[in-house]
Length: 213
Image (cartoon, rainbow, N blue to C red):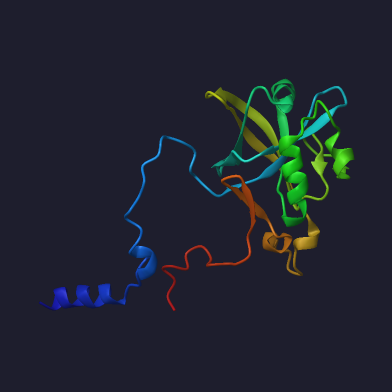
């Protein structure tokens, strides 16, 4: 039938989702116990303030976007972390995006406690004043996202701070002549299974799979 032929012709033009080499090994899998397997994830440095002139930096991998309008994000933090009580007290924090050059500082801020060391001083990072919250920005970060907590949800090992974005700062170093921001030029990094990775190649842009050639 003509209709059937058209469907067959259309399906023949479709490219396989993955290569044959990968396809042949995909279906042999191990079942593991429940765990966090959504990787990679952003590794960000979150800055906080205690309301008495003190501040700290904590590295967070459990973070992401939750809503577009209003713009909202979340971070999940263990209650025993030094920064946790600061966030609970002030209801504010700043998410500072990280880069290849900030990899050492990102790891350091995740393993060293602010009870023991001034991380800004130890890492020679620049404190910048935020416009809406009391926590400082990290000057070396390409993007700083000021956040105000809307709700703290006690989930278990981590408590999730759901927050509204109240201001965003983007480095002019990564803007072109038309004012477009190019985060890829800052060489952002991600975290996966205990390791940090750089992002080195653009694979496509949003909607490219259905874009007419």
